[in-house]
Image: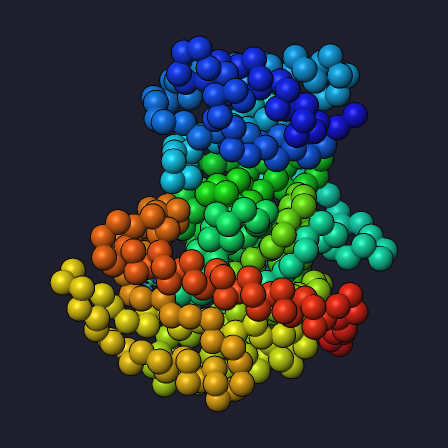
Length: 400
Ligand code: ADP
Ligand code: MG
């Protein structure tokens, strides 16, 4: 019998919480449980505490889950506890079981055709598609690097999760993965369980990135077929479970990964990120046309680094606000919103704390949070309209 959410909840009922006299369930600390097969992740919201406190609580939770599983006669191979604060910021992570003892995943070899080590070979799943548990797949692309594609993908994922959706984030930029830094994954270990990569559960999002499977400073050089293989493995051999949204951060430009993605996945659509300048618009319209040629619906255009709000509250149009909106209307595409240049956004990305983008207190922070929330709402709307338009019969593309 597999591990279920209910079984984990039951087990946690008797485990003491951080405040004496309370247990993890009755005390209201339990925020989320992801249980899949013999693997479970628990998210606890706590008022604070030391690493020792967290370790002690996690240890008691682990023992309770093991005891419950023994009674039910099912195995627990991996159990993780994530502690978060009120703003969903990760404070501490603890992992147990085979997860911590799991062999590290040997890095994939960009120079050869070897699959990512330790992973199961893909088995064809007739009729189910590669991601049967995922409702909407949304790619985030841009004409060039540095315009904020990863920033938009990440904040879209975190923003959707904050609205209660089950969200996955795939760092599909296999040439320049940003998510290890932007999500703060440095201290997280990669877990392979039954031949499948277990996503990192951070900031309410299940994330996977090739950046955690290779050495951080190693250049990632993939020839076309290898890029295809790397993206395919990351996508198909991650244990995403049930998701409302899978957000994919694509590499810049119009290359191999986009082709692979179009072949592999039934995408709900793509979001194009653009900065306001004319040169950026030219590149972004090429990206939009590429998606259309691949029969991927363009959900709309986001203008990033649109304007800057100074400490005095004054607004500066550094790059010429509105350029991307014009481009969108020229191409007859929806405009999804503008994100201001914000020092905190850059700093939170470097720190791996995207949740902080949604709870800023000062003028610029409030503006950022509003802009991101509006973007999330606009994307939600476009996704549901696209899903209705596509019905169940979206054409799939074959590329030879
Ligand atoms: P891409 O994925 O398109 O290459 P990134 O999302 O990595 O771009 O963004 C490039 C850099 O610019 C990162 O350091 C990021 O934190 C920063 N950045 C992106 N958008 C903004 C913004 N609106 N305000 C401030 N910094 C930003
Ligand atoms: Mg990027």
